[in-house]
Image (cartoon, rainbow, N blue to C red; front, side, top):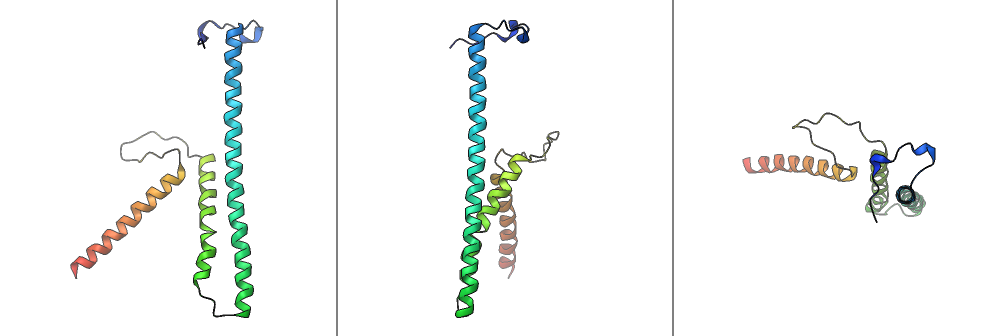
Length: 145
């Protein structure tokens, strides 16, 4: 498809838009609508999945509370199973919030790390850095003994 020359479009409010330019503008609007619809669908699906995991954790917690009344010897690892249904949706919700409400752009400096478009990836990287620092400290302590 031929690319429209935007430099000689003139006043677009006059209504004298050429047919080829009109068609490319319509395609651009359709693409923008499609992208927005896809983003909304993905956002809604992620929230729905997080709510489903939260509801599962609540139901499992209620079952655990009622089971503990009958048999208090239930192993404590069952609570870890419930936590496994709480942590992932929390990460999903934090990622969605950070994706929607981005930090304002700062002047770039060399010692600042640049954040990516995926906030969860930044969270995992920061977590990995902190864990590796702590592991290095522990290894240093063990080698001294």
